[in-house]
Structure formats: C-alpha cells, structure tokens
Length: 179
Image 1 (spheres, helix red, strand yellow):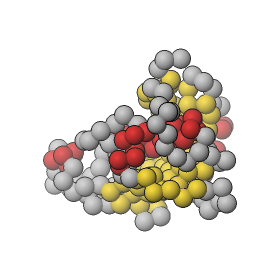
Image 2 (cartoon, one colour):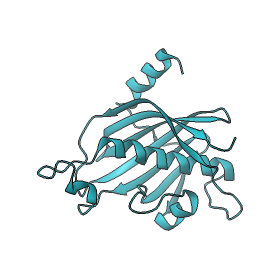
Image 3 (cartoon, one colour):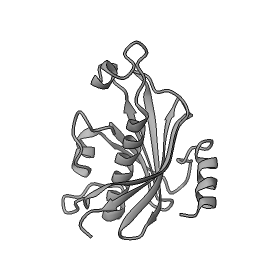
C-alpha cells in the first residue's frame, strides 16, 4: 500500500464511519453462537458479540460488542481507572474482518456447514489509532471493510465506535497460513 493511499484512508477513517446506509446492506442478526461457527476464537478471547450487517458489494461488515465490567483485563490494566486496552480494539476489528472473509467465501450473508474459514493470522498493522477511551460497560459498534485480497494477504480497515463516535481506527493485514 502506497503511503499516500494509507494517509488518505487514515484521514477519512478517523472521521467517517465505514458502515454507511446503502441499498446493498443486508441486515442480519447473528449472535455469538453463529460467530463461533465462523471464526475459531473462544472466550475469553472472542470479541464479537453479534453481527448486524453485511455488504458484499462494498466489502463491509458491522457488528457489536459490549465490554463486560467483569472482564479480567480490567484487574490489571489501570485498575484504579480501568480502560480497555488499545491492542484489544485492533483484535476486535480483526475478528470482525475474519467474519467478512467468511461471508465472501460463502457468497452471501449466511452461515454454511459446507464452508470453513481458511486459517488467517495477523500479519501487519499499517496504522492504528486509539482516539477515545473504551470503558467497562460500553457497547461498541464495530466496522470492517476489505481493501484488498491478493490470495496471500487480506488488507482491511476497521473501526470501533461508541455512541456514534469513532474510538479507534486501524489498517491491518491478515495472512493466509496454508496458501
């Protein structure tokens, strides 16, 4: 990715939500049980509570997560003033992006017993911004949008929003493990 392209994405991504009203948006209501059928993550490291929308035309997805005040991370991450770690913002975006890769493989906003997500791992963080704190009890809206998939690496941008305000933004790459 060229530096001018990245700079343009970051400029827009920290100001404008990735998920926009669009006729191609498909509203869905997939909870954690369905998310577990898509990605391999499990508690305590499953960070997508629900998937609410998929748009395969614009290669984007929308989900939600509520940050439990009882999350064990708060016992050690600034205990007097608990704040959700920025690295977990990035992980949350990545997990939702994996769900989008799955729906692309299925060819629609549905879960298929015949399709399995190929193994992808975090590869590179091009850019990561933590703009506003996420606190215990916050309900987060998560967005991810695919930028490129060259059959080796998937590049995407992601956001975490709270009450419509962008809290974090990232541009990341995932690598296919078995290709």
